[in-house]
Length: 352
Image 1 (tube, rainbow, N blue to C red):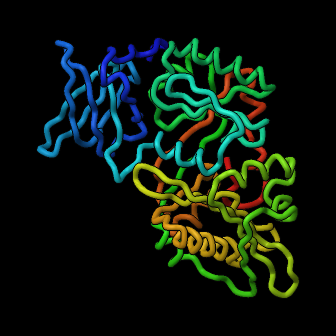
Image 2: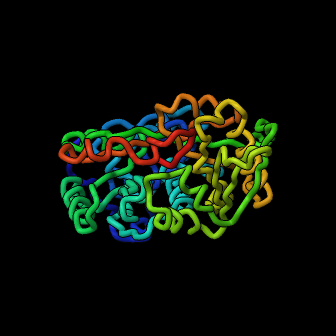
């Protein structure tokens, strides 16, 4: 892929539409509006079976009758995943609403986010669609924007991305890999267990003890500002019924989308001495019950790809991979952001 940006659609009604699709959506049902060689706009609906070469390559859409429709990527005027599914980029919008940043700025379809360096999720660029300028210029703008805020530049991209080759050519390295998992809320509640010898309670705000267990190295006031920002959010604590010791934590928020309401789970953590006592399952059972009460038929969470213990738990609870995504940083600063604060705490689903 070259570093140039694909040309924008011509002026007119289609120009107001957006390309909400990426190579990470191969296998999903999509609708693609594209321009033919004679300039006429046409639509194709079917399964996205291939996307090669980034914005300089082409897509292939398979119709219900089995015919394949090739589409030049730079001829796409608008595209999206057909509901009730959501694209990788749309799920990232849902996740952002559940873990919102302090500040955002738009660069074409990209969203620059900052929260004082609290977590990578709120201090990175959510890459979606086209930035509206050449890739090298977009990255220069990103670096300046984060430098103005005293933060290292970081981009969050679905895997695979139309920008993989271009980012690598510009020296932006992968610093960590994460997956977004989804499940039916009812399945999670049924598979999770209440646990024994535990007292599991809810609250509307995190206690100092809760915060200290989840993120001991992050300023509690800064973290709380992000945690309580969604309009619907719950904090769950699991304590030893005999001693009152805090053994586990979890948080959930409720978010709307074009495909219905979602519950997002974050900050699921078990204190090291309490592992293998069913603490995480008990917390998940309570979070799923809260999600059902708040009309969220689907639940998502994000976890580092290398966290094998967490994946074992989530597989057992019925979660499946929706998509993977990566954080990339320019080579000089990649080492600084390779290990996020939230990945160093002991637990299962701290927010990457």
